[in-house]
Length: 55
Image 1: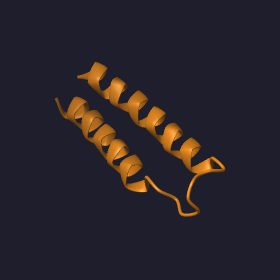
Image 2: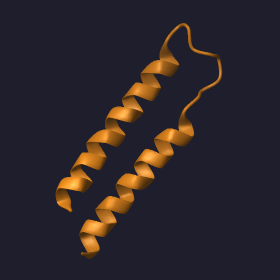
Image 3: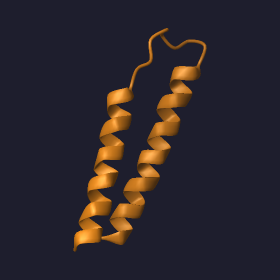
Image 4: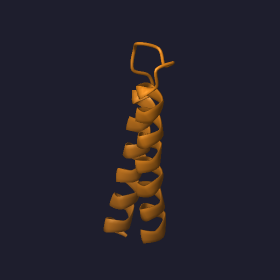
């Protein structure tokens, strides 16, 4: 379970970086997009860490 929690953390961190980078590009729309995806990735990470903690 610790491996899954670690992978989830790295994936959420990477996805956050990708979304923030894509929104910082000059060709991006003016409005921030992808906040829901970042939140979903971090919520999944929190669930994995809680599952590891309580197992």
